[in-house]
Length: 209
Image (cartoon, rainbow, N blue to C red; front, side, top):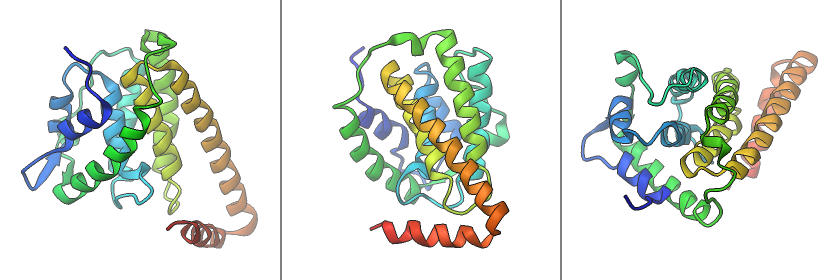
């Protein structure tokens, strides 16, 4: 089978004529292609610069379950029926297609199979541990702070999908930065109070186009 590009894989997963796309449908379309594509798709709503509101907690829970299964050494993800019914609206799926495909076309020039330890049992378990930590950070109810950990999960998904261990190491470094960022934010809230979140949020918005 010819290698499928990241942008083509995303298009095949998210393209739908129905009013919504369920997690169960995405899992079915992923088939035997592993955890990487699921990490990519489920982290995209929060990882994009303009995230889709309302997906961080439900998708964070699904990503948490994915991480546990990676740690357990499963070859194929399995979800409870309730999680498989989580929906991604057609409008949101279209927005993810447009934003994700542009990002993937850029990444396709960078990623390639190398340092293939990431595909080993130990490599996937290590990535699973990092996904677990990032999924927990995604679900912390602090506005506009879930993008960074979701982006780390996205990068891990790219590394797993393309068997690029070097890219995965870059994701690990980004994960360390995410932990430090959250640690600094929690410290700031303790010292200066919850209103510091509003100040940080306004600063972030001023930087966005």
